[in-house]
Image 1 (spheres, rainbow, N blue to C red):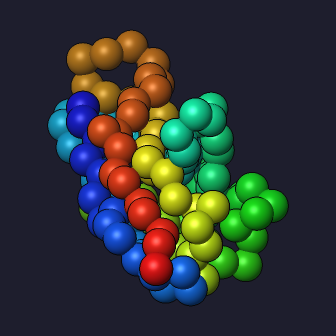
Image 2: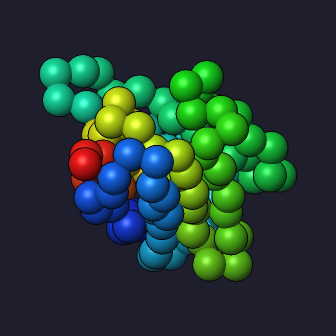
Length: 120
């Protein structure tokens, strides 16, 4: 199983980006999917969570600006980021709890990270 994140880039303050993270492999089911971010010199922080039923949760600083969604048919999670601010700049990582064929139980998988830069 692999998670492939994409969609990062350079954007001006106030701009928007949409991150995607696609899971591939011998997947039986995907539970919780999350986006984290890590800025230079800081610990990795949880940004948004979406449960298998569609319930979502966000860190306070992104509420009202970011939207997490998922397409279960495509095994993909998205993060729509609007009104971006310089303090949103970080490497963004996707994370998912996946049950796969050939491995016992649900296991934690991480994407490779995608850089988001917010600068004028």
